[in-house]
Structures are given as structure tokens and as C-alpha cells.
Length: 78
Image 1: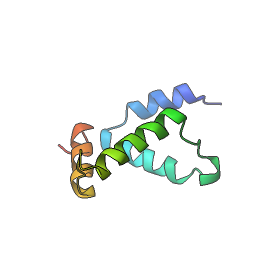
Image 2 (image 1 turned 45 degrees about the horizontal axis):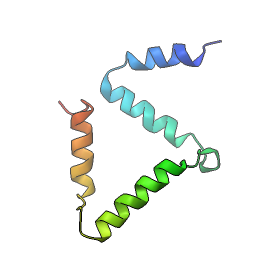
Image 3 (image 1 turned 45 degrees about the vertical axis):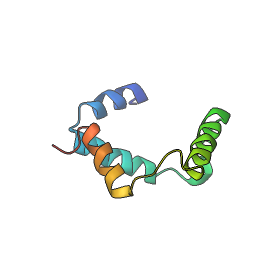
Image 4 (image 1 turned 30 degrees about the vertical axis):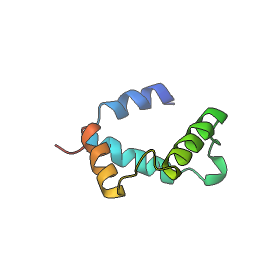
């Protein structure tokens, strides 16, 4: 039987576009009932950012820009 480390090593050798496709496929295969809830530090950071946004101390970006920047930084778009 193949273990997780062997699968991870094989997945890391895939081209970036196939790794992204694998991530999406795996994500879709996990039931929301099995998601691990965020820890208290994550919740505190989310609240801090929300408060800063509400106070006008930071701005947001449209999803299309965020997605494009994330794909570029991950090496998924040329």
C-alpha cells in the first residue's frame, strides 16, 4: 500500500497546473463535516483584519485580482 509521504512526493513532481488540479479534486472530495475548524489564532487574525477593513485602515481587492496574483506567485501562470 502507498503511504501519504509517497503520494506527496509523487504529487510534488507534477507540473504546477496538475498540482493545482489535484488540490481542487482533493478539496472537493472532503465533506464539510470533516473540515478542521480554524484555531483561535486564525479567528483572531480574521477578526483583526475585518475590524481594520471596517475602520477603513485597509482595503480589499476584487477576487479576479487576488486569484491572478496568487496563481502568478504560485507559478501557475507563466
